[in-house]
Amino acid sequence: MKLVFAFAAALPLAAAVQFPVSYPPTNEVAMENLVAIPMRDGVKLYADIYRPAKPGKYPVIVCRTPYSTERYPNAYDAAVFFSQRGFVFVYQDVRGRHESEGKWEPFRNDIEDGYDTIEWAATQAWSNGKVGMQGGSYLGHVQWRAAMSKPPHLVTIFPSVAATSLYHDWITLNGGWRLSFNFGWGPVRQESRIMQNTGMHGGNPESISYDKMLWHLPLNDMQKLAGRNAQFYRDWIAHPDYDAYWKKINAEEMFDQLGIPVHTLGGFFDIFSQGSIRGYTGMSHKGATETARKGSNMIIGPWGHGSSRKFGDLDFGEHAHVDAHALELRWFDYWLKGLQNGLDKEPPVKIYLMGRNEWRLENEFPLARAQYKKMYLHSGGRANGAQGDGRLSWDMPADEKTDSYRYDPDNPVPSLGGNNCCGTPTPAGPKDQRPIENRPDVLVYTSDYLQVPVEVTGPVKLVLHASSDALDTDFVAKLIDVYPDGRSFNMAEGIVRARYREGTDRPKMLEPGKTYEMTIDMVATSVEFQKGHRIRVDVTSSHFPQFDRNPNTGEEFGKGTAVKVARQTVHHSRAAASHIVLPVIPASR
Image (spheres, helix red, strand yellow):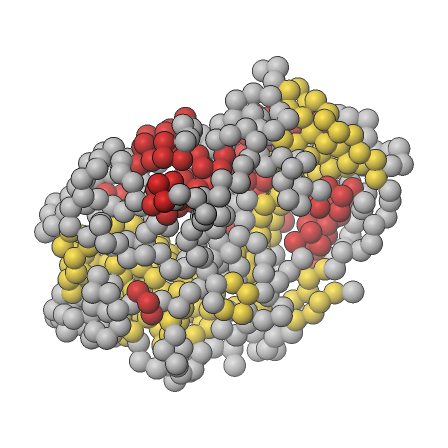
């Protein structure tokens, strides 16, 4: 039985989008607890082994977690699911976590430890020598790190909601420090060997309120307020640029050396959406073998950090949610068992088109038929807030007045939705932006009411011509779908830290008052703006606490306590035509 979603016959790929439903268990399961797996340096990492009870040689799925193979919620779900269907499932605590020996240092040992675990699993009596990897979030990050070591017996990986480049997907976005997530996931939840529920999202004395901690300066001693002293967090702050510390663990530096097929799964509102997309585009364009290039797949839906029907303030319909285990099972059946289940006959990309709320099959991403069109920012000099005179249109601007606003780090624009996740106090997903669109430090540019639907599917960027009286500052952009009743929902977002305008590996301070062209990468989306809706772009300089407040001082990152109010100016003239670049898909109906 399969779920079948039909879409318009006029589309380039006129076929039903099908998602598999899992077949019933095929075998009983035997389980070995606390199996020691030796690493090359003598450290032992412990795993639970779930395997079919009948003796024999089976394909192996390796899953490596920092969250405990025994204690974390849903710890057994994947292990039991796959072992009941003819796979050996090796479920391992990563180095320094829970039962495993060694020092816990996120990301740093997962290349070598992943290799050693995979090759150990491939040589066991119950293994047929074919190994895949499974898991989401950190359990997906470690798959990319292991693949970088190119283990001979690794056949495929299926990273869900996972980063390819930890620096560009997790730690920062275009240099903007992901404060809420880095601090909340990092020292607050991960420093102790056994994960604890800190209760810092409510019920604690005001002195240790998580929300109040996030305001603390300097950043490099914030964790002390939570009673933490994580060296890895100090290291993150000490490396705000994209340098050798981060390059060593960036799979994107090695796409052209990776020869295995990869299946990514992610959400447009996930904090790691960039990794899900770049993982597929990188392997399909640069993979070292034809199998990697043609065999890699991607599914990306209207989700956050995992599949769902509803997210943020929107309900995307009954078909939005997918069964991840069923998808993984079909993938591993094909690549590890050699079952001819039709996987190789399907287009490699499945995308959920929001607004129309339907799945689409595609042959590639970005879409070859996309037309990259510019919508220009306009105003009479008063685009401040939704009641201002900011406009968005396909027409080039004339010589128009600039827009200005004050960015005060002590009064930042609060985070309201977007790409965030995982226990932080920032609500994620599409949220009605009206509560913050009346602020004078938010520039709002809105199109006329649409006479026909406009589909935008693919990478989005804002090219901003701006100046500041500060040495360094931030600019934030959001792409908004404005409904006829006035509700406005964020569909894509981005930030640029001005010192990284020429690249995150080339920091360079601003010359106060000088106008610069800065590109804000807004990652990607897939949304059909419906007839009667309007397209909007919001521009500001803060998104707190999802991103840290730029103090505007140009001081070394993480060490300063001083802040400065910055005067920001956005230009939209013929000579400096600020615009958003939208991947518009020609109408199919």
